[in-house]
Length: 138
Image 1 (tube, rainbow, N blue to C red):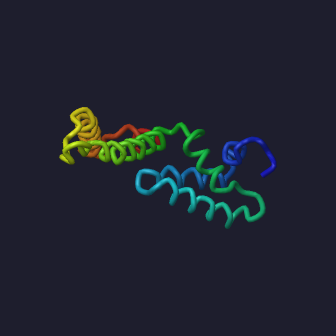
Image 2 (image 1 turned 90 degrees about the horizontal axis):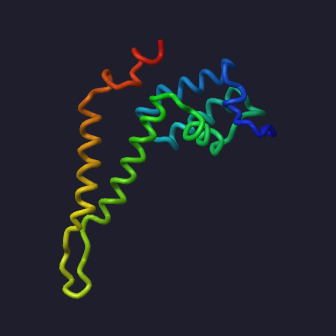
């Protein structure tokens, strides 16, 4: 697209755009962002073969423009999971002099806090979360 506006924002309300947005809202709690973006590009390519957003534009729309709680919540879960993986790398360290592996207490606390927060969210159950269909989509 030659427009400086986001394609999905520019055509908000259009039947095709609404279908893609619905697909994103339905899929985001269950799949990776990259898979969601790739499938959205494919869907748009089937309906709008000559003019549709590319992968980067759709990813930007999802991560920066969409304000729906389901999207923001899923993005936060992805970010917490990413941080968890990074912090896990710092939980233990090898002492240079002795070669002994030690635990980094600060990193361990952060890691366990993230684990606890994720566990708490998942124990809540999808039906009670604020983005559930019953509370947002009617």
